[in-house]
Length: 114
Image (cartoon, rainbow, N blue to C red):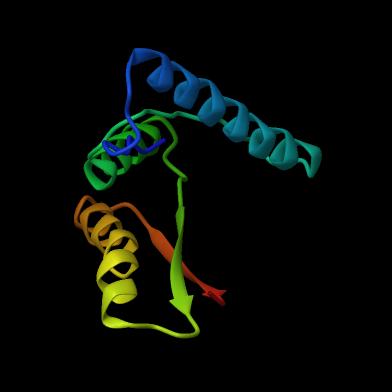
């Protein structure tokens, strides 16, 4: 989960975010296992989303040598300069850092209408 400093009001909100994040991840684990896939999860709550994702994925890749990372890149129907600056770089930054570490990454375009 990502900590939004504008909404952060105290430690209880961090605990709520951790609980929500873990519950959400567990739903994906159940889905993966229901189709016969082996699944595991790691999660963290951080304000530095790119570095934290790279840290967690690198750790997971060391634990499982056949790891492949799938990232979603938002493709916005009505892009503006603001939405491009806000949404365009996160997945690319993660992709570059993971590829530099030798971790295979597949970027999937996600079409979004706002």
